[in-house]
Amino acid sequence: MKKKTKEVPSMGIYTSRGARVEFSDAEAGYPHDQETLKKNKLKLGDIYTVDKVDVYGFSSTLYLKEFPGVPFNTVNFSNV
Image 1 (cartoon, helix red, strand yellow):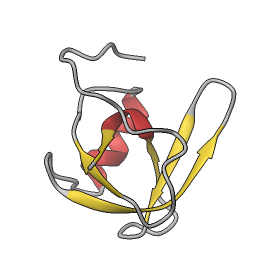
Image 2 (cartoon, helix red, strand yellow; image 1 turned 90 degrees about the vertical axis):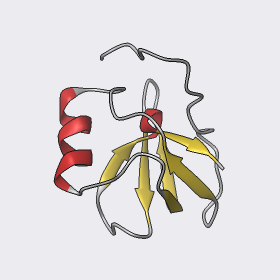
Image 3 (cartoon, helix red, strand yellow; image 1 turned 90 degrees about the horizontal axis):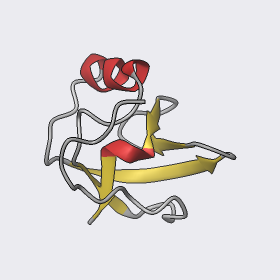
Image 4 (tube, helix red, strand yellow; image 1 turned 30 degrees about the vertical axis):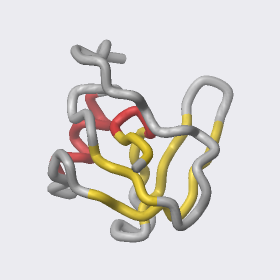
């Protein structure tokens, strides 16, 4: 996993469905996370709605209402 190059707080992994999050860090996460962001054309600073967050032992996956079924890494987002 690539280290964050700047201090951007990641979203809380227990953020509720319907909460708003900002796409705040395009460089964090694994290469496949960055590819998913590019493929879906997310723009830094844009606000999205949480559909659900799956929390695992060492990672967490975010699903956004605006992109049904597409898994994102929570490290790329911050709470609004």
